[in-house]
Image 1 (cartoon, protein in one colour):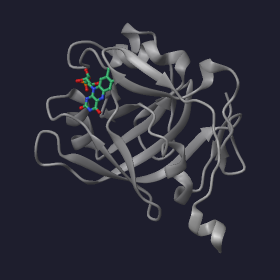
Image 2 (spheres, rainbow, N blue to C red):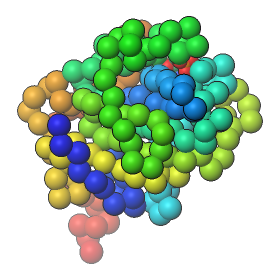
Image 3 (cartoon, helix red, strand yellow):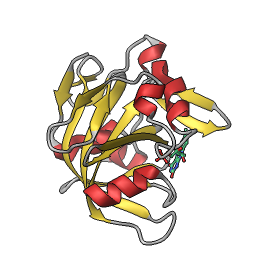
Length: 191
Ligand SMILES: Cc1cc2nc3c(=O)[nH]c(=O)nc-3n(C[C@H](O)[C@H](O)[C@H](O)COP(=O)(O)O)c2cc1C
């Protein structure tokens, strides 16, 4: 699939709608992948993100050691993979081979990316959380979107439901991103 490079100041648009994410990490010859629902944009320029990565995870160990992570937003077609990589630890098994997940290289970080996502962010850690669930703050150093669905600086999601981003509820239940609509504030209408 084609990936289009996004200006860093616009990278918040890739996940402003709150989709579930997949975080990839690498340090030395180790690499890992996990699901993460708790992520958010933090700033436009420099573009920053916050992610909550439990201190007990292998991901947190690799992110702390490398100072980098990959943040990507899976399409519905890989919802099962999202649960797979959120259900066991890379300390115990290589999740890439266990679930047959193929990767492609990022440009500025060592962590790999996976296909079938709507967007990908390359992040460098600028603040490590001290406590177990403290957010980690990352600066976005590269951003890409699915070229078919991100056009003229905004999402135009495909009618194919398998290509929609997904939102995690709990217990294996997701919602997929629905139809867009527009409105305007009363104040802007009065101007
Ligand atoms: C859909 C989903 C969302 C999750 N969101 C988070 C999250 O935001 N933060 C977190 O620390 N763990 C989250 N988890 C749990 C981790 O993905 C899980 O602990 C994983 O096994 C950690 O893997 P690792 O030890 O290989 O890093 C989530 C799991 C699922 C299935």
